Amino acid sequence: MSPLLPSNCGFEVAGSAAHGVAQGWSTHFSERFAGQPFKSVAIRATDSQGQQFHRKGEFVATATGVEGSLVYAASSLLRDEIARTGQASFELDLLPDRSAEHVLAQVRHPRGSRSLSSHLKSRLGLDGIKMGILHERLDKEAMHDPVRLAQAIKSLPITVSATRPIDEAISSAGGVRWESLNPDLMVEAKPGLFCAGEMLDWEAPTGGYLLTACMASGVVAGEGVARHLHQTGPL
Image (spheres, helix red, strand yellow):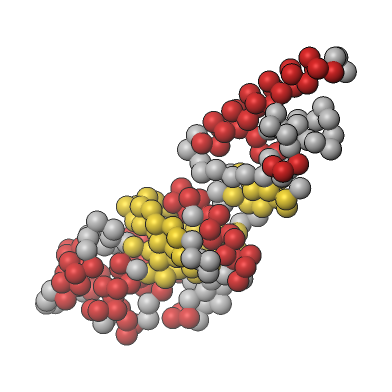
Protein backbone atom coordinates (compact mmCIF):
# COMPACT_ATOMS: atom_id res chain seq x y z
CA MET A 1 0.00 0.00 0.00
CA SER A 2 1.08 3.55 -0.74
CA PRO A 3 -0.08 6.17 1.77
CA LEU A 4 -3.31 7.93 0.85
CA LEU A 5 -2.76 11.57 -0.10
CA PRO A 6 -5.08 14.37 -1.24
CA SER A 7 -5.32 14.83 -5.00
CA ASN A 8 -7.22 17.47 -6.97
CA CYS A 9 -7.15 19.50 -3.78
CA GLY A 10 -6.87 23.04 -2.49
CA PHE A 11 -3.88 24.58 -0.74
CA GLU A 12 -3.04 26.91 2.12
CA VAL A 13 -1.02 29.94 1.02
CA ALA A 14 2.04 31.15 2.86
CA GLY A 15 1.94 34.66 4.28
CA SER A 16 3.02 37.91 2.67
CA ALA A 17 6.14 39.67 3.93
CA ALA A 18 4.87 42.88 2.34
CA HIS A 19 2.03 42.98 4.89
CA GLY A 20 3.63 41.13 7.79
CA VAL A 21 1.28 38.13 7.52
CA ALA A 22 2.94 34.88 8.62
CA GLN A 23 0.38 32.50 7.12
CA GLY A 24 -2.56 32.81 4.75
CA TRP A 25 -4.10 35.92 3.26
CA SER A 26 -4.40 39.20 5.10
CA THR A 27 -7.70 39.73 6.91
CA HIS A 28 -8.64 42.43 4.39
CA PHE A 29 -8.05 40.20 1.36
CA SER A 30 -9.74 37.17 2.93
CA GLU A 31 -12.85 39.07 3.99
CA ARG A 32 -13.22 40.86 0.67
CA PHE A 33 -12.23 38.22 -1.88
CA ALA A 34 -12.69 34.72 -0.37
CA GLY A 35 -14.94 32.76 -2.71
CA GLN A 36 -14.22 34.93 -5.74
CA PRO A 37 -12.65 33.48 -8.91
CA PHE A 38 -9.49 34.41 -10.75
CA LYS A 39 -10.72 34.13 -14.35
CA SER A 40 -8.61 33.88 -17.51
CA VAL A 41 -5.31 33.51 -15.69
CA ALA A 42 -2.39 31.11 -16.06
CA ILE A 43 -0.22 29.20 -13.60
CA ARG A 44 3.39 28.24 -14.14
CA ALA A 45 5.30 26.00 -11.73
CA THR A 46 8.64 24.18 -11.74
CA ASP A 47 9.52 21.87 -8.87
CA SER A 48 12.95 21.04 -7.44
CA GLN A 49 13.12 17.99 -9.73
CA GLY A 50 12.67 20.12 -12.85
CA GLN A 51 9.11 18.97 -13.50
CA GLN A 52 7.06 21.77 -15.05
CA PHE A 53 3.41 22.80 -15.19
CA HIS A 54 1.90 25.59 -17.29
CA ARG A 55 -1.79 25.99 -18.00
CA LYS A 56 -4.43 28.65 -18.49
CA GLY A 57 -7.77 28.50 -16.68
CA GLU A 58 -9.39 29.74 -13.51
CA PHE A 59 -9.38 29.09 -9.78
CA VAL A 60 -10.87 30.51 -6.59
CA ALA A 61 -9.44 32.30 -3.56
CA THR A 62 -10.54 30.71 -0.29
CA ALA A 63 -10.37 32.23 3.18
CA THR A 64 -6.91 30.74 3.68
CA GLY A 65 -5.65 29.77 0.24
CA VAL A 66 -6.61 28.62 -3.24
CA GLU A 67 -8.72 25.91 -4.87
CA GLY A 68 -10.49 25.24 -8.16
CA SER A 69 -9.86 23.57 -11.50
CA LEU A 70 -6.55 25.22 -12.40
CA VAL A 71 -5.11 24.59 -8.94
CA TYR A 72 -6.38 20.99 -9.00
CA ALA A 73 -4.55 20.43 -12.29
CA ALA A 74 -1.28 21.48 -10.63
CA SER A 75 -2.01 19.78 -7.32
CA SER A 76 0.16 16.66 -7.66
CA LEU A 77 3.25 18.72 -8.51
CA LEU A 78 2.61 21.20 -5.69
CA ARG A 79 1.73 18.50 -3.14
CA ASP A 80 4.86 16.45 -3.88
CA GLU A 81 7.08 19.54 -3.73
CA ILE A 82 5.64 20.44 -0.31
CA ALA A 83 6.43 16.90 0.86
CA ARG A 84 10.03 17.27 -0.35
CA THR A 85 10.86 20.82 0.70
CA GLY A 86 8.10 22.07 3.02
CA GLN A 87 6.56 24.48 0.53
CA ALA A 88 5.87 24.98 -3.17
CA SER A 89 5.50 28.03 -5.38
CA PHE A 90 3.80 28.93 -8.62
CA GLU A 91 3.81 32.04 -10.78
CA LEU A 92 0.42 33.61 -11.46
CA ASP A 93 -0.03 35.36 -14.80
CA LEU A 94 -2.99 37.71 -14.41
CA LEU A 95 -3.07 38.57 -18.14
CA PRO A 96 -1.91 35.50 -20.08
CA ASP A 97 -3.22 36.85 -23.39
CA ARG A 98 -1.11 40.03 -23.14
CA SER A 99 2.64 40.09 -23.73
CA ALA A 100 5.00 41.33 -21.04
CA GLU A 101 6.02 44.18 -23.35
CA HIS A 102 2.41 45.27 -23.85
CA VAL A 103 1.70 45.16 -20.12
CA LEU A 104 4.78 47.26 -19.32
CA ALA A 105 3.85 49.81 -21.99
CA GLN A 106 0.34 50.16 -20.58
CA VAL A 107 1.56 50.45 -16.99
CA ARG A 108 4.01 53.16 -18.07
CA HIS A 109 1.37 55.08 -20.03
CA PRO A 110 0.83 58.52 -18.44
CA ARG A 111 -2.16 58.38 -16.09
CA GLY A 112 -2.58 62.05 -15.29
CA SER A 113 -4.78 62.59 -12.26
CA ARG A 114 -6.23 59.07 -12.28
CA SER A 115 -5.52 56.72 -9.40
CA LEU A 116 -3.34 53.69 -10.07
CA SER A 117 -6.37 51.40 -9.76
CA SER A 118 -8.34 53.44 -12.31
CA HIS A 119 -5.32 53.52 -14.62
CA LEU A 120 -4.82 49.74 -14.57
CA LYS A 121 -8.53 49.12 -15.04
CA SER A 122 -8.64 51.49 -18.01
CA ARG A 123 -5.44 50.34 -19.72
CA LEU A 124 -5.42 46.62 -18.86
CA GLY A 125 -8.86 45.72 -17.53
CA LEU A 126 -7.45 44.86 -14.11
CA ASP A 127 -9.88 45.23 -11.23
CA GLY A 128 -11.54 43.25 -8.46
CA ILE A 129 -9.61 40.28 -7.17
CA LYS A 130 -6.81 40.75 -9.70
CA MET A 131 -6.08 44.19 -8.31
CA GLY A 132 -6.60 42.81 -4.83
CA ILE A 133 -3.90 40.16 -5.20
CA LEU A 134 -1.42 42.76 -6.43
CA HIS A 135 -2.02 44.91 -3.36
CA GLU A 136 -1.90 41.75 -1.23
CA ARG A 137 1.51 40.62 -2.47
CA LEU A 138 3.33 43.85 -3.36
CA ASP A 139 4.48 46.64 -1.09
CA LYS A 140 3.77 50.29 -1.92
CA GLU A 141 7.18 50.79 -3.50
CA ALA A 142 6.65 47.91 -5.92
CA MET A 143 3.11 49.03 -6.74
CA HIS A 144 4.47 52.39 -7.90
CA ASP A 145 7.46 50.96 -9.80
CA PRO A 146 6.22 50.35 -13.39
CA VAL A 147 8.79 47.63 -14.12
CA ARG A 148 8.18 45.65 -10.92
CA LEU A 149 4.41 46.08 -11.20
CA ALA A 150 4.36 44.89 -14.82
CA GLN A 151 6.52 41.90 -13.87
CA ALA A 152 4.12 41.03 -11.06
CA ILE A 153 1.10 41.25 -13.36
CA LYS A 154 2.73 38.67 -15.64
CA SER A 155 4.50 36.56 -13.02
CA LEU A 156 3.28 37.00 -9.44
CA PRO A 157 4.90 34.46 -7.07
CA ILE A 158 2.46 32.60 -4.83
CA THR A 159 3.80 30.18 -2.21
CA VAL A 160 1.67 27.39 -0.77
CA SER A 161 2.61 25.65 2.46
CA ALA A 162 0.14 22.77 2.85
CA THR A 163 -2.64 20.89 1.11
CA ARG A 164 -6.15 21.07 2.44
CA PRO A 165 -7.21 17.95 4.40
CA ILE A 166 -7.78 14.77 2.39
CA ASP A 167 -11.47 14.68 3.35
CA GLU A 168 -11.91 17.94 1.40
CA ALA A 169 -10.07 16.66 -1.69
CA ILE A 170 -11.94 15.61 -4.82
CA SER A 171 -9.87 12.43 -5.04
CA SER A 172 -6.86 10.71 -3.52
CA ALA A 173 -3.48 9.41 -4.57
CA GLY A 174 -2.01 6.30 -2.99
CA GLY A 175 -3.64 2.94 -2.38
CA VAL A 176 -2.91 -0.60 -3.56
CA ARG A 177 0.33 -0.60 -5.55
CA TRP A 178 0.29 -1.83 -9.13
CA GLU A 179 3.18 -4.24 -8.57
CA SER A 180 1.05 -6.19 -6.07
CA LEU A 181 -1.62 -6.89 -8.74
CA ASN A 182 -1.84 -9.22 -11.70
CA PRO A 183 -3.10 -8.00 -15.12
CA ASP A 184 -6.70 -8.72 -14.01
CA LEU A 185 -6.24 -6.38 -11.00
CA MET A 186 -6.27 -9.30 -8.55
CA VAL A 187 -4.05 -9.00 -5.48
CA GLU A 188 -1.29 -11.57 -6.00
CA ALA A 189 -0.96 -12.30 -2.28
CA LYS A 190 -4.73 -12.72 -1.83
CA PRO A 191 -6.23 -14.73 -4.71
CA GLY A 192 -9.86 -13.81 -5.27
CA LEU A 193 -9.43 -10.21 -4.03
CA PHE A 194 -9.71 -7.66 -6.85
CA CYS A 195 -9.20 -3.89 -6.74
CA ALA A 196 -10.46 -1.09 -8.96
CA GLY A 197 -10.93 2.66 -9.09
CA GLU A 198 -9.51 4.72 -6.25
CA MET A 199 -8.50 1.61 -4.36
CA LEU A 200 -5.49 1.67 -6.73
CA ASP A 201 -2.37 3.83 -6.41
CA TRP A 202 -3.00 6.32 -9.21
CA GLU A 203 -4.44 9.77 -9.76
CA ALA A 204 -6.02 11.61 -12.66
CA PRO A 205 -7.34 15.10 -13.40
CA THR A 206 -10.95 16.03 -12.80
CA GLY A 207 -13.45 16.61 -15.60
CA GLY A 208 -14.63 13.05 -16.24
CA TYR A 209 -11.18 11.46 -16.40
CA LEU A 210 -11.48 10.05 -12.88
CA LEU A 211 -14.88 8.50 -13.53
CA THR A 212 -13.81 7.10 -16.89
CA ALA A 213 -10.69 5.47 -15.47
CA CYS A 214 -12.55 4.12 -12.43
CA MET A 215 -15.21 2.53 -14.62
CA ALA A 216 -12.60 1.17 -17.03
CA SER A 217 -10.65 -0.44 -14.20
CA GLY A 218 -13.93 -1.84 -12.89
CA VAL A 219 -14.49 -3.54 -16.24
CA VAL A 220 -10.99 -5.04 -16.12
CA ALA A 221 -11.48 -6.26 -12.55
CA GLY A 222 -14.97 -7.60 -13.31
CA GLU A 223 -13.74 -9.58 -16.29
CA GLY A 224 -10.88 -10.81 -14.11
CA VAL A 225 -13.35 -12.03 -11.49
CA ALA A 226 -15.26 -13.96 -14.16
CA ARG A 227 -12.07 -15.61 -15.40
CA HIS A 228 -10.97 -16.42 -11.86
CA LEU A 229 -14.30 -18.05 -11.01
CA HIS A 230 -14.25 -19.99 -14.26
CA GLN A 231 -10.82 -21.36 -13.36
CA THR A 232 -11.39 -22.04 -9.66
CA GLY A 233 -15.12 -22.65 -9.48
CA PRO A 234 -17.65 -20.85 -7.25
CA LEU A 235 -16.42 -19.62 -3.87
